[in-house]
Image (cartoon, rainbow, N blue to C red; front, side):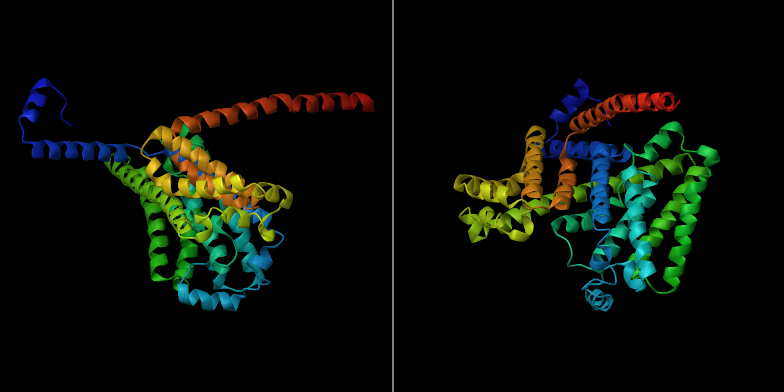
Length: 412
């Protein structure tokens, strides 16, 4: 890029207005391309959505552990035959329809939990994100009529997370990279990564040979396996320019996926707000009143009825919900306004989770909203959590240690 100087400025001012405009546009594009290819865009934001969505899905799976067979297994009202017929029309990807055995279902469910833990901790994040996506799609496409809007958000975001580099910070992968900056521990062999790739490729080869995959999903999964192998080969045997090129490609794909996630969140809010505007109950400001009187989604009826008893509060909540949802995409261009709006949206979802008993929907939407938080805010929250954990460790173990030391004396 040409450095600024009085001579350069003089030559630019002598150009026609259209030429100056195109030169400035070219400079902006060049700076943007350099920014995208030189490093990972929004590493903390991508880490937050990784943690948020994996934690939400893990909590949901553990919460429904007792009812897993009634929801997704052989005891579900949506039988395996019905799911298979439905899947033939919408072509949803789910490995639970490969076999109708009880053991296969249990293996998939436990594997989905394990993949969620892997992604939450950021261990082997590339592989974990793919396994997480497979687990989410397997269960949700097996019984598509179970769940709510939060499940739909996780369904979509699980696919996008595969294309992000969401383990750059706040992950075990980041800690491992910090221990070995060159990334070539054990001479670049990475035994665990090789074993995982070999196992994944062997299973993929088997299911492909059995015809269990459609053309699109076969291309996606085989593309992932080949990309993993290519990355390991380049890292091990060509650490120079080829590795730099692959890093740049990965950064570009990550930036594109983050942009798609941001656009998806904006579409969720804008479409929800515009659809609400068309409803008569939202137009007259009474929609919240009826929502707070639904018996199946009000875990604390007394609290819900107390809020609904005030006409002013119902009116403000109804109109306020529509206003913030429609305005959300237009507030993202100013950092201060964006931060305030994200705080409002998070508060709104927290209220939904409490009043309407939708905790997993709340967790999923708060995770999506956190994408728009500034890095400084995320670091401040991280430091606060770190100090809280250190304070807890310093205070809680002390009486336990003292009790363990005095116990042998009492016994004596």
